Amino acid sequence: MVSRSLGAIRQNGYVVRDIRASMDYWLNVLGVGPWFYVDRVKTDYFRYRGEESDMQMSIALANSGDLQIELIQQRNDAPSLYRDFLNAGNEGLQHLAYWTTDFQGLYDALCEKGHVVGHEGAIGGAQGRFAYFDAPAPHTGAMIEISDISGPKGKFFEHIRRVAATWDGSDPIRETR
Image 1 (cartoon, rainbow, N blue to C red):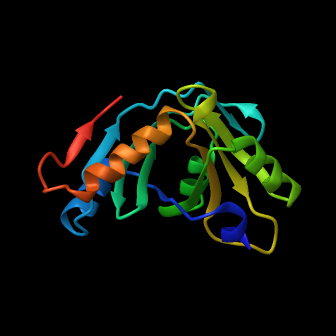
Image 2 (cartoon, rainbow, N blue to C red; image 1 turned 45 degrees about the horizontal axis):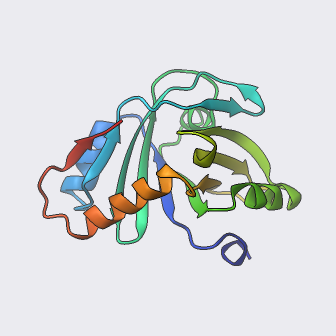
């Protein structure tokens, strides 16, 4: 039902304690890269359980085929689902992301099915929204994220996929803003 409702899983998101060590593992053990690394992501806003939060994070993005891998390291102790995940003793796969050009429609449909927004925000304007959902019981496991790709973020994600498809191993970590 989920894949018929949401489309293909486009990203696996890993919450990690050491993003540099994680990129190194994915590069040198798994051969995945190159990584597009943002040391401090600038969010337009970020809300955790409906309340504003000053969560700060670093992210790294790479593709393995059509699947994007995201590494996230929270840089402070502000409220977020990332912090909750780590504080529960976890590290690793935290969410599965679906991409959409109809963010509000998908957001509303998930809420109508009983999913509750855990945290949400935007990067790069209204077409850069994202939301993470707690799943209704009895589901356990990775959270669901939806991400609006109708704007510049979608073009950036496509660029990462294209670069990974022909990557020759050079320039494995590419710092970006």
